[in-house]
Image (cartoon, rainbow, N blue to C red; front, side):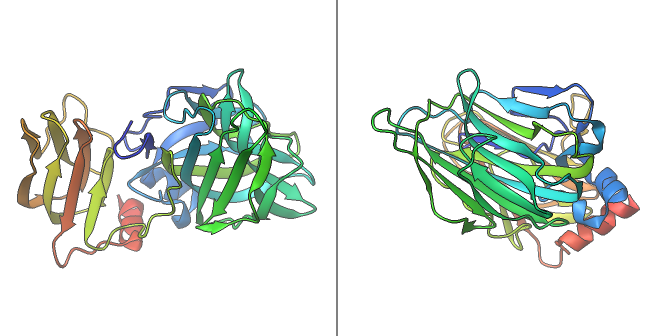
Length: 331
């Protein structure tokens, strides 16, 4: 878990991170660094945040490729479960009427209770939400390929009697249609994300996933992809790529705060790596450090009870998506 959310994962360690398990019999799911992504798929495939994203290459066959989380998305009857993640899709080749699932909230079994699908609707590629992967009641909109899109699913779990579960679906902050209502749902016990139920006519395409957040309220899109001044960090994150200078501050709600800062733009932060700064606190207080310089980038490894870190960029640091893409191409 990552304060203040029930689930937060950006794949910044080059792994599935907070997700409990992975299913990928055709080896088409990977956790890719920005350097690989922009060289393989083009500049638009740079991760939405940080330097890593989860990749699914649909040319790898029809077997499911997904990560599964069994704790961070739990929701009992009458409880709301929300998810927000960023999705990049390009190069889809799908036969007419083909449809597959990219995210689902599931009850015990597992049984689909709220899903997000991609489908070819008479030649138009759509993104849609429904109760199940084959659900006929959907809320759909055109899927814009070649750019990052914010996906939000907000499910109010059925109370049991009467059937009063609901699903709301948001794309790039806008509600798609009206709520799907009158649903008979079980308690949510896990979530799956990737590509599931792929049909034979779907033979190519790239899916990238980043910045997955779960909570008990709607989360909404980020105000800025790359903050122009201060980045608020609550889970492991590459906050800068290339050289720069920042002021940092950190706090937690207990006495176990430990935040490690590494001069790196990749996931090389294991036992042999040396942090350039460690902030610790044995009391419920804020600790800080001014003028922290780095050359390759800045990775923040967050630890403690409900930790929060603020990274403030010094004036003159060229902080932009374009700069990060150029750095990745030249690296």
